Image 1 (cartoon, rainbow over the protein chains, first blue to last red):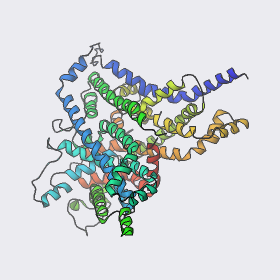
Image 2: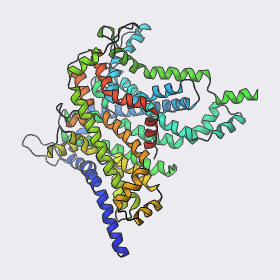
Image 3: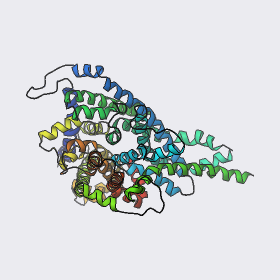
Image 4: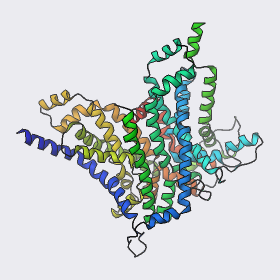
Length: 295
Length: 276
């Protein structure tokens, strides 16, 4: 066998190995992504009428759709609340669990358990927790003599209520990444800091925090993606209501596409979501990975 | 003086311990409340009494009120099917990326990575159209198909395979093993911890997945547990919290129990899968 022939056979083998995965990836990721973009320039086929080219009309509808903008605003609010809160809590939990502390195993279990529960189950649990009059939360506020409050039914608190659930679900998940990173830190750093007489805050601020930076960035990207992907709990808790007060982009996409069956407009919303996620990915690839080296 | 100082520096203060415990109890509280309700008769659902009788009646009633046996079967078949296909496809693809030089490799790898940012969870409308064209709506296959090729698994296994010494590869080839035999005899056994890690992550993800299964199913025939639970608790249970919490715990129980038994394994797997 000559060298060239050998290389050729290797290439054929390689492509055969890749083929099944690549075909499925193209069929269910690349093709739909491209097709969504195309469909967003066409009208929704109705009855016997086929879809026709409408140019930017779907995007025009989007710009003028007040519910879309509510969803955008809510989603930004949701992201701005869940990302720092879940990461901050995760870091705090990891710092605690990393110490030799009484009941450490229990603490770790308590923090991490929400992560393994299905979001639908989590939502049921919290729906009960939030229920007016019977819910545990109401019982506490009653004890304190506060007036009754319908947390999920009030437009002023619904978004906050679903945000808390998301933070509860996510913090323990991010904790384990911090915990893993903390456990790889050299113990002599701590000894050195104590000899220098550094306070615990100084040790955290000057030693642990900078060394945890790659983890923080990794978690940050995941938290960002989740902020635009996590909507399961809305189906149980609020259905986006009351009056769209707690709707998020992906949930609104579901409503437009599968409750109103306006698939063309839903495609336009999908394009927006894909653009957001692609933006996060490009930011990670070109900005973060340049500065942080995982390998 | 110096000694106590060093100790104080290394040990968390009682204040830390207290705060950590308060947070942990707060964290477990909603779940504990649900457990309380599920295991007590309805009249105790919202009334605290340490001596309230324990009962499994809520679970019995929930089990009888909806086709949960079918939902369990669907979820287990679904999770097993997805994992099996994912592992086979990802192993083959990762091997090609890790050990073969061929034209178009970088482009192909970039195409794979695209799925890490545009997940199938977002492309609902288009994938629904595809499934209805294929006549697969309301089947387990339709729920699984978009997830069969996992960019994440390919990426993870490629990293692992690249770390395996090439000499082992060559030794196998000298003994007359073909590429597939080498893969099976050398690479797969050495990557076992990564397979376990990915399997745990994949199983928990698909056990918990909701939105796509909700859209693509419309009858109990293919509905997984999450969708079944949502239909069950939103449609006809009114506010019978005892039954709803029982159903909720029932559907989460297998994962929850597995987690409590294999905590270390779970945490390590999620870590290994997360840190590239």
